[in-house]
Image (cartoon, rainbow, N blue to C red; front, side, top):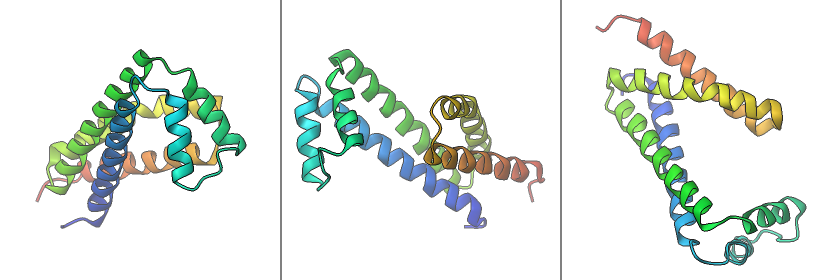
Length: 148
């Protein structure tokens, strides 16, 4: 691979794709089941304390999930998994269109990410914004260079 930065961005996108795919499969696997019960069981299987304040809030939040919301979340997760996979594979194949596509897709979500950060700030959200801004800037600089 010619460019280590492109390779790292591609891997980052493919990891995000795999995580979104796992979320989608998980969402559809709890469809028409007691979401709270399934999530509580899975969390305890992973060795987390289900009485932890944050985990309790998550379980309570998932308890109000209607089948329609679960379907919507699963479909959205599949969409994002496909989007990230296209970006990642295109970047691994060193396609110029993938660089432009990644800039457009990543930059288009920055306003939403910033809004969400302003509403509910956290170090994790800030880190995501910083990584995505760095990806956009890096790719813009690459796209400005003429092809050899």
